[in-house]
Image (cartoon, rainbow, N blue to C red; front, side):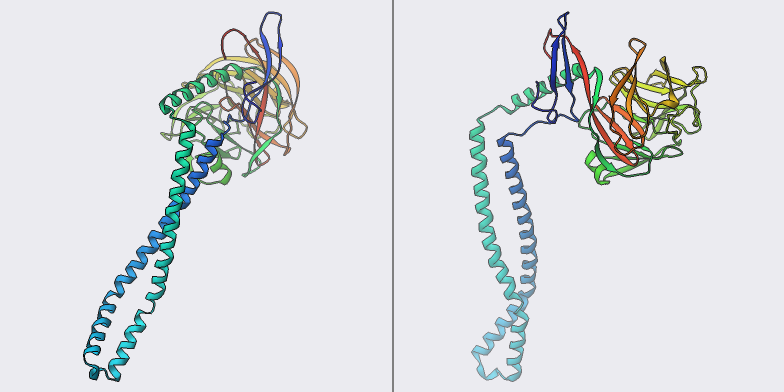
Length: 436
């Protein structure tokens, strides 16, 4: 076992020894790997929160002091005037007639608002003493943590972390490919949009890039929303809009290495749109591919052409008149959109609910409605197929998009206006020689 639970990372939960010496194991693949934080990290996080609170208090104090100082400056001339009048009155009491006395009273009245300002200064003085004590306590806590952690070479620690990340990546590459044996219960990320649509993250960029793309509707759409993070997508904020030069058809779009691959409306043309340059880099016709609901999935929606990405690259799933409406799987060059090789699966596309690729294998659901299951698998490496019986919980009863993301190793789904993800369980064959 590499980690304690599937929530924290990889977990090998069954294993066996094959006659040829290979290790057979099944692994739970998490939504994303996380590291548990130790006590020191927890304490440091609490200290950071205290520092932030103190900083905010200091900002408030600074603004208040500046405001009060301005008021004192404005009353300075009044105080000087009152002082001079009092000196005159003290030197010559005879000059202190009724009129002069009233003027003195008026001057005093003008200075009365200064009293609460001075009281506020007293309060601020107490607050400053308190803040100084807090800072002194924080300094002591930080010194104690530093002594307990020891004099580590942080550059060396950083190198060790990078090395562990590299080993983990290598491990994930070895564990990443396998035969699908199970799909987790659905995890609803958000409920938004119409009944049909697609949403996705990039299938190739580093894990630090957590942008989410959102495309509502299944035909004639041109508006793509790009959210900065998954959390921004959940809250519906911090997004930019891309307006595609050509409208899309269906929901079989995919984002791969910074570009969107989609089917141009009322054609069998594949389009590669680059987000950063906001331009079409290339477009090419898929020879013979049906379009305009000629060969859609069972739910319709102009879903004739479905682009996918797995561990081995870019794929297009469609059908033609020549193969009698059966699903065709084609490897596609992501640079030129040229078809490199095609396989006829023999499975009628109109009988399929949706499909997705994992490790060169096409998995097909038998319906887009409630009660669906993953019913069929076609293996491109052996050009063979089998019927499967993998339960698939269709929580909202109408799936119009289903795609696998090899970077995150989860299924992305648009289910009746809900954006949902599923974890997957794969069966692996890993050679025991060498380190993971």
